[in-house]
Image (cartoon, rainbow, N blue to C red; front, top):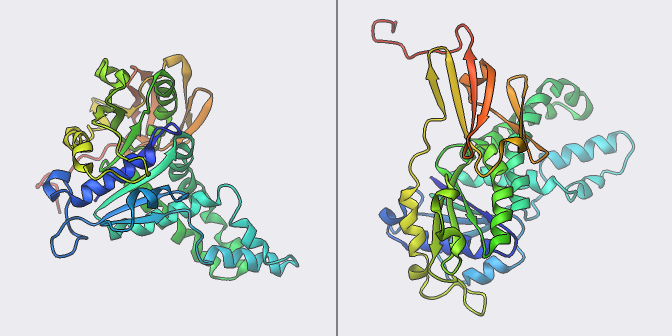
Length: 370
């Protein structure tokens, strides 16, 4: 499955690009989009889903009524589930108003958890998933939650017995199930098949916002994708190397017409996007071994070394970028090592570690295999 996450500064046209990409991939021949058709019907084409986090109607207006793309709002109110029932039962048992669970679901942050769970549920049902993350601030909240939420739930596993005493035996099994669902979402984000595409908008101010806000998004483990700018904007066209590891591409024109609908000649407008997608080579190896040292490379472009601080906390890292801390989960082999140095070359953050005894497990040879 391919997953495309789209974000950018507010007003840059993120929803328009996400919708245009979804429509183009849904109607293009499978080889042009590079997608399989396991979820398609009759071999017509891949099953494409366009997801957003809170639809104000713009996506449905862009897509119209007759299209081959499923449109899903990840933040749409969901029927009461196990979490709501457990919370209501707990409050009611201790003399409170059980209806508080209804308002709890509307608190800031609850929408992120609902979106992550909904995202995990739709992953097996589609061939190509395009997610309109909204602006850079909302994208940061969601991608940060894919790391922090499973980490917190994993830390709560030891409290299952206490939860079971409070609200019954069902609570003892709830946290592991939520953890499985959320970690499935996190695995897709970090799979290398998921790409983060950034719509820069036009002008120096939008470019500055992009260069400051996007690097921390990559600390979630998502791979960089396309950097999309209007053809009339010289920012992306000048010095393409300064946008590495993103692949800059200039769109041929605006994808929406004056009525807010996708243009009839959409294939021509989005041709540069389709042409650029194959240039997104496989994600290079993140971990390189030399003798007893491992070097782990994480994309962190456009950031000065004096704006980054790296701290070792247990097996994890806290990477502070522009005074904002971000939880970073190293690969399993790196977690079994001892970090000794971190350096930043302007494109990648490299963390060098020393192998502990037994930390590296080389593949068995045929002679060693029992």
